[in-house]
Amino acid sequence: MARIPSFNILRSFEAVVRHRSMTRAAEELCVTHGAVSKQIQALEEELGVTLLRRLHRSVEPTPEAEMLAKTLGTAFGLIETGVKQLQPGPLSVSCSSSILMRWLIPRLSEFKKTQPDIDLQISADHGPTDMLRDGISIAIRNDVIPPPSNVVVKPLMREWIGPVCSPEYAKENGINEIADLARARILATSSRPKAWAEWLALSGWKDAIPKEHESYEHFYVVLHAAACGLGITIAPRFLVEDDLTEGRLVAPFGFLAGERNVVLWISPQVRTRSDIREFSDWLCQEVESYVHAPSVTSNKR
Image: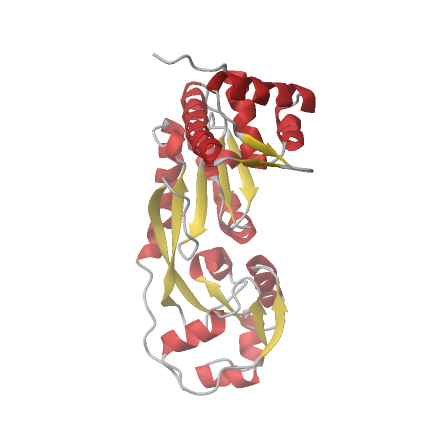
């Protein structure tokens, strides 16, 4: 059996290749540049091959070094996975700010009542992510975002979308038919700039698309603007369900089944943990009422 170089040397080598820099590798490993340089030199002498070409401000790995570093990266990932399974940290949840503020947080107290011992750590993010690197257990995402490799993808719900505004705004501006949108103040969000066009296409409306008057950065901001009577906007039903129930918003034309789905990404290294199963099952129960939402198919003109 071939002698395997020390773990510290291999870890330094993998970091150098990944960063293309001994300085950055040393910073990551909390050691000196000289220590990393000596470890790389020792590895090259032990293997009898040149692994790195030293450039002025960086290093360039040879093809052999690239292959070895890729294998080591996979191995270190497996080691980290094994350790995390024996020493699980908090259940880390990632979702967009809008889902977090308008849907998840208002319901978390019910989950905590039934699972008070589960330690939750929640972060606001809506884009692609490396779940292992970022320490994320579960991510709530829209299915237009490609999932990372190896994650478990679990369907959560279909999005139902429709225009919403305050009841006072709908009454004052006579918003009863789709044609009435021509005199409405149209609110949009830069996080989903085609929302109005998508809904109008689903509704079968063939006339001119209403001109947008104002655009806000996030759903939770534009929905707050709509609730304050500043205009009418498009929203996924699950983000406004509480507002509809409590009368802060109305949906003049109901909701239509959209083309997007909300899904869960479950990190592969923690998928067997009981707290992950408990939380994902609870999420599915919470959205059950939305899955069978009635579709509005009649188009008023």
